[in-house]
Image (cartoon, rainbow, N blue to C red; front, side, top):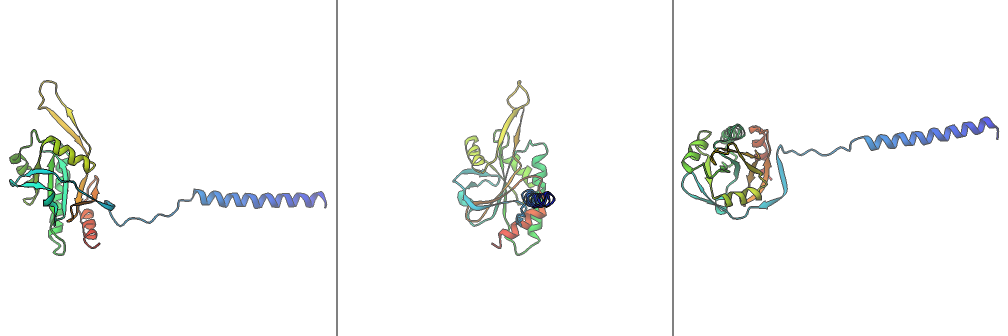
Length: 211
């Protein structure tokens, strides 16, 4: 075999190897298509039962595990001295509730704001606060221990930030702005993280009601 022929064979082999390497690299770097979820929020693959708890509502009733049965319930953890997260979230929940009211095929959910600040948020103050967003809304208050246990179970992180060393009453609370959705079987089925969009939450709610 001539030297020229040998060189051609070597270059041809190299070209084949490089072509194969290029195709392999392209396949490795190209993202694999992933099926997109039809949901705006996070829907749990396996709904999680909610443990028993005992709070009081702004209409003077006990609010416990039994009051979740037979209703869809949106729960938000906040407090009345909250700067922006709470009023913005409650306003979106109000908009969401009015959109649901316009759809006769959708069941009316309970909307409950549970205070993370039971020391300052008495039931009268909470009632005035939540009903400013919609008269159907409920506020709920419990002991610090009961609130911590329920928030922990639902994955709501919060911490108290002391504003002044002079008095224990000057503080704020940093907290998650998530909205939790409980199904009529008392199970956490979905949650929504900020920024909230009322129409998209309603869309998810409608989809969950057809499953």
